[in-house]
Amino acid sequence: MLMFIGRKLAAGLVLFIAVTFVTFLLVFSNGEESVRNNLGELATEDQIAQRVNELNLDQPVLVQYVKWLGSLLTGSLGRSFNSGETVTSILATRIPVTLSIIFLALLVTSVLSIAVGVVSAVKGGWVDRSLQFLAGGAAALPSFLVAIALTFLFAIALPIFPATGYVPFGEDPGRWATSLVLPIAALVIHMVANSAQQFRGAMVDALKQDYIRTLRSRGVPERAVVLRHALRNAAAPGLTILSVQTIGLVGGAVLIEQIFALPGVGQFTIRAAIAGDLPSVMGVVVFGTLLVLVVNILADVVNAWINPRVRLS
View 1 (cartoon, rainbow, N blue to C red):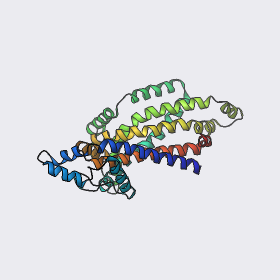
View 2: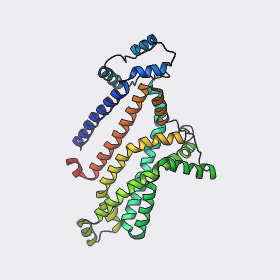
View 3: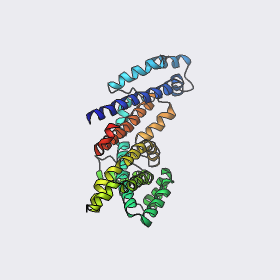
View 4: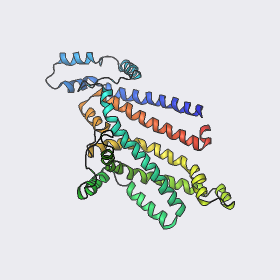
């Protein structure tokens, strides 16, 4: 198991370097133009040249990347071109908001996807057809439309939850939870629709296997057959689709944060991109890449723990 985890960590490190290097090339290849935009139209060429020199943007991009990577190893992501604050300190206040949304959405999606997939596969008939119909309809709805509809229904028509804003957990856990209900629901509805279909298909295949018939013929309770044996073998495809959906979840969180005015990484990303704040953009890329890698590695480890054959693949 340790060798399996080591291989996954090594692959993750290579992927992280590849993603950040390519992004760095794209972002910093036109650093002078970003400085020009930041200083404004009234800036002279001497002022622009001086600023470019101060930020080391006149050096080869590969040299800049190596220096940036060295700083990253010490925990520094540089300073924002706009505010002068360290990118690390800015992200430290925003990452908890985004992580709250993403991890709670993943948790709720996992539970609901397994429940819907198992019920659909086991019950069959009209239950299966109804759940598939609802899942297909939910999968076709964009998250932003769901967010708008939920806001209208549960924040305006029925003022149960706040329409916008965020309350830190340490300040008031109850208000923190209510401020996240609608954003998480907007993300979960679309994700569950896709994941539940994957779990259902995997469960249907697992329940058709010979060992399931053998267990039933030996008098093993149906609950144990479904939850202990069939679900264990059907978990791999479901976990795979959940880990893949994390990439879309990160992008969806950016949009959802804008709709609900949440002070997370999403808002910061849009502002940094518009302003040409290159260090901030790279900081967001580091956060997003690490998040996706961590979720995928955890999914692979859980997969290997459930099914030891995965470790040999």
